Image (cartoon, rainbow, N blue to C red; front, side, top):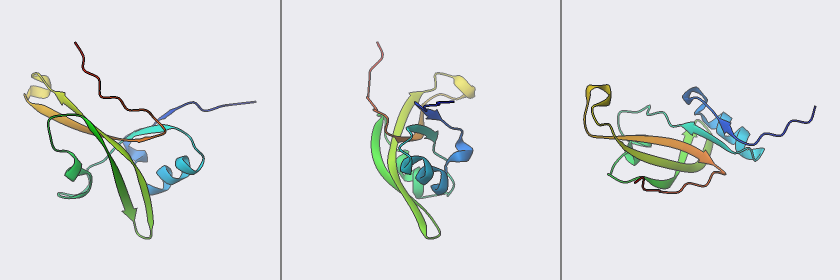
Length: 104
């Protein structure tokens, strides 16, 4: 069976150094939602602003580390989840092209 992986869209449970390094070393394109673990610092430092953007981020676990592109997406909630205002979401993206498009 000849199976070729085009893209991987993984759940947030896969957001760890081991999985990111494994997929990166095998050159498999993927997107994983980032997990906010600490009360301050880490991914939370990137979740600021009112516009979507990309940044490079290094995640460390014991002696291992993974450096990857994080795409921060800004979405206005419009009364979703009984809240109004801006929501920020972060995604770990490897070998994916991120474009900041305006929707009309």
